[in-house]
Image 1 (cartoon, rainbow, N blue to C red):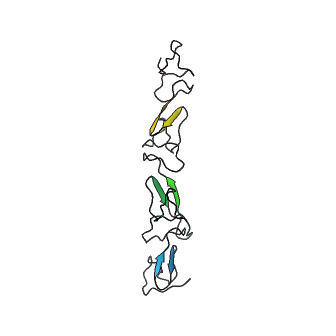
Image 2: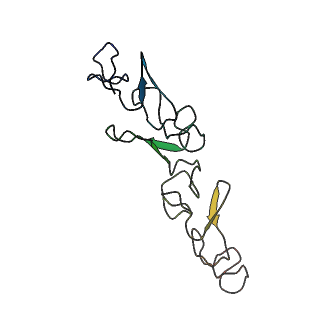
Image 3: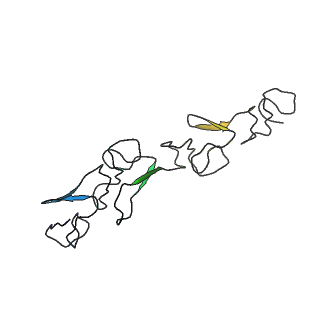
Length: 158
């Protein structure tokens, strides 16, 4: 599609070669449409995932939501952004099973936001469950019960 915005500047919707740039709609003026799946890279759009739904990483006003990162397609592909939850930021969003505010594995929440074996999350707390048979975290032992006097105490200490 052709356009002519009266200048030879790229990035304003109409390229220096007078073609409509990805994410823009041009008539007498060029403008972007939030939610159409095409981020106008030099516009106010910080993301465009192809909808105007909140809670999926890209808000209804095409702003990146807290706890997310949205990546645009390369200019030559021109398509919707991919939004992923930011692991390790302490904010549980999207498909994260947990987010303990760090990227350390072995503390109950993996670096990719997955709950590790032997751990349980209750609200923002990630911890072990003594007596579940899963030796994890600070447990010195876990013998699948919470009985004292059998070598592993009810608090999973020796």
